[in-house]
Image (cartoon, rainbow, N blue to C red; front, side):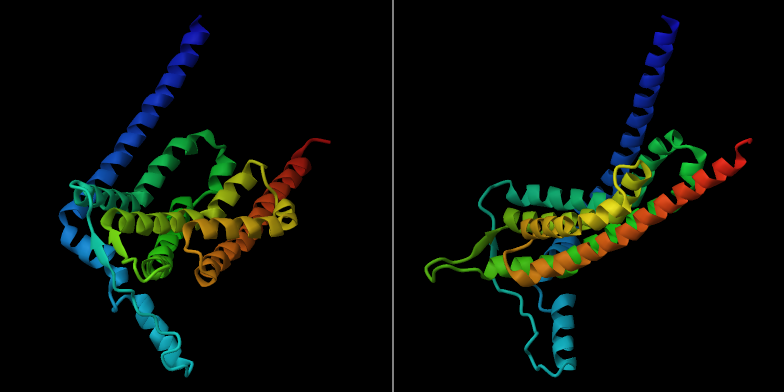
Length: 279
């Protein structure tokens, strides 16, 4: 009975520890969420509605690139002019909350991941833990690169595609605020998560679920899956899907090298252990 009580207490202790990690993570998100909520003029007018402005970085870059290549205005992008409306009494407030929550999570991501890592790290062996140094930094870096790519490239292209899409002159595109915020946040967050692929592969390789040989053998399947995911989070135009597919597939190729690195380290460790065994 005592062994049962000890194991039960140990389980409850883990739950208590997890609870405090979650509480601290939620508090961090809440702090940044509150900052975003009360900075709504900048958040809404500059960040959220930024892709509607002609001064958005992607449009300037496209025009400069077009001029550099001697194509005149061939590559220039112009944001589609459309009206944003609300059709529900609570829509503005709920959109405000949603945007603030997403920004809160995005800014707090390094701390939230650090709390998550503090919870699972004690379960690793010392030699396993030493190979995970810098994991918080690299996971956060990949996440922010993905979020930036989604916001600066994918979001304006997707918004312009859907806002300018028309099947009849008798239909006027009046976009609801909730719809606009939804597609913007979905694309940005999905891009941030997809860029975590190398870290996911690292962990799956550590526990032996995937190998570099397996990843090489399923390159074509991976490419098709990436295409499908790109089609789900982007509009139905080929250009935008390619913009998503290429960098994510590039990350897949990098992940093969990461997986191979993990397996080489494991093989080196095995050789050292065999040499240390008494004969």
